Image 1 (cartoon, one colour):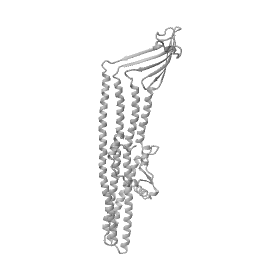
Image 2 (cartoon, helix red, strand yellow):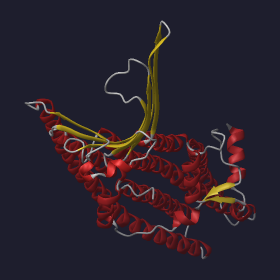
Image 3 (cartoon, one colour):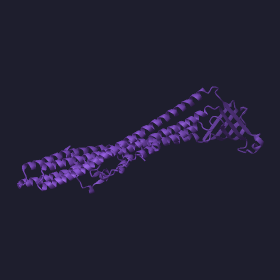
Length: 461
């Protein structure tokens, strides 16, 4: 433990110009690219892309071949060879073409002996005309792909918040360590001067003890800051992973962005974020895509209320796609026509399914309204918290300045022989206390500011 603390002291005591600064944006880029949770979210997006690709397979052209042959006692009863290509289209129309070859002494009457080529169409004219299960599945797969993108944003939004809080915790601990390190140096210098003055008979032993007690007091704060800096640096490592999926600790010469920590932008963006969240929040986006998928289901279920009616039409040719004789008026020759019709008399299944879908839509609308209200209230709640912290920050910043001026004045009075070291230490302790309080409020403000961005769902662009 002592060795670890000693190493940390060496690291944090280096000249800042010789150290590498890990900025927040670079840190989040590492989290986005390498953290297992982020990779899992991306895998879900990739899987949805694969599912969409598979869903498009329902419109793949299909080539089939069927053959049947029978011989008995040397007789060729029949020999059938049928080859067909079907092309399914996104508008519900199916185009097909094929060749039939039939021969034998006992072919069935509806088959044409010899070679028969055909080109045909199949089309629903009621149920399935506007949408069917295949087209609905494709539309919902596309919607699901977009939905997983929103789910990824929601996962990263949560992950980023946790990672950002750890980053600022590390930054604040590092800043406190630096502040106390400088104060400890000053206190030790004052102690050395007091010892020299005591040896020269200019100061009493009590003054030396007073200076030494102040060094001990600051050392206690300094040691606590050491442990906080070490603990926060270890906590930051939870979000640091390399390309080989292995976690790692930061290099010894890496420090946080202290300038960004000191330059806090204080502005009220609450209403702007409320407006942005309504249109861009990933959780609301997920529900909107669910509504889109339910709308596809509603249209499909409404189609189920219609009777099934399908038209089938083939143009025929006995000479391999020679359809010249088929172009007589009204297709009076060389064609095959079919019509299917089916209708349940009560439509109870179709009506029940349609009603269930409407209930799902109503339920999802209620969830969206409630979720939107929750998000808006959360954003406004963090906005109120930020306004309160802003007032406290202004107050503590003023206190830091005032205590610093009091300390300087007291040091001047001590040089004139009008003050005591006890008062100097008292002023200094108040100044250090106000410094640490100001740093603590900065940390709270930054965390609250990013929580408001998280509540608005905009930590991830």
